[in-house]
Length: 585
Image 1: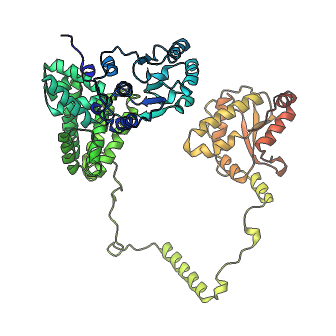
Image 2 (image 1 turned 180 degrees about the vertical axis):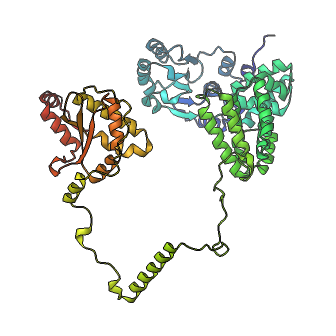
Image 3 (image 1 turned 60 degrees about the horizontal axis):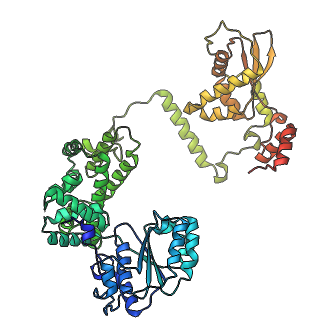
């Protein structure tokens, strides 16, 4: 006897046998019973959820000569018999993935002109309709809008977003849902009972989770596992055949993490990796497990777990032991590890760090192995109580200063309230420009002449070389945190060669635009001279820093003013700007 895979052998033949699509099948049965049929339907949804199956059942029912009261086919009339024996001339199926050209659609449209010989309607089922080309869609559009009265189109697709909006607007759209785990488990139980295969419910749950919402995938995996286990499907054989990580590992890791047992977790991780499982697979599976544990903490979210009843109870028991804060923090750690996993060069170390952090979430702060920085530092010294500290005799100078201070306070207390504030004149506040100029002429006291290491070098240099080396010095200063502020302001300055006694000795003048900048640069004058002497290979240079005259201070230009200035200085740029219509963004 020829072997038929379960996905074909147990394919539903009636609406009632379709699993997990109750709302859609009820709508289709009511449409048949009332005779209110549309000329075009679109079935969309993920793979393996029954789109093509429902299209075939629907095509069979609408051509049935004696449909039942609840909208099912009778399976006795000539139309039903022809459909069951796959010899019906009223139902046409087209795979748009391999027949997506304009000629294929035109040939199909020619068949719509011929009325059915047996039955009421000609039904055209186009599978994977999103694969049609743009030209084929356009050729199909007119016939879809105004088809003959005896024609019904049923389109099926897994990617509705790729279909033209003009096609969607002419169809009744039915969105098929993913199969949930309990429905898949019940269907697999039915298939196993009919095939005489023994099973464990946990094993069927693993198959259902692996199928990811597709019944066809679940049945294919079921056949594979049944062949591997020789008709006795057990949990261990399923995870061995499908190379699935045992869920007990996830439960054990969380139990150990709550108890802060890092060493045991590392041993368990090593055994998992030695079995050939990838660390990224472990992190993803553990994150899904922690999510399920979090859902199990609240009775309202407990039904969200797509697992078997036995597994749901295990999640509920573990949720009672895990603090909510622990679950939140663990999810953050695992999500961060998952993001960085692909980019990491040492993936195992990344996984180990994530598991260690997870095991330390509930560790007390005072524990040495907690691995976290303390919220506050402990005081290194006890507070000294002045009353208990032995008094030391003060020096005579200190005693005299204290007496003078007390005498001044007593004199201020005897004066009227208005006389207590000292009078200030405006001349004593701030600095005038003349005062700044006077201060500039004085030789600063903190300008210590640093020692020049290249005393023998006296190379000649130009203004361009000076500007280049000045900028290099500023860039080096910018890397030092303490000098970043002044380095950024010095980059905008241009030192100049003011005098030259001979080919070697030169004076470099630096003009500071503000008193604050002048003071800061004066304190660094010796270091600036040593650095420039080394960069310019000239130990005979002198550095002069002065405060800028009022006429030398240039106003800050805006971006547009700077652009206009550059255009005036460069006629070619101005012409290019006018030709292309360039402007400041």
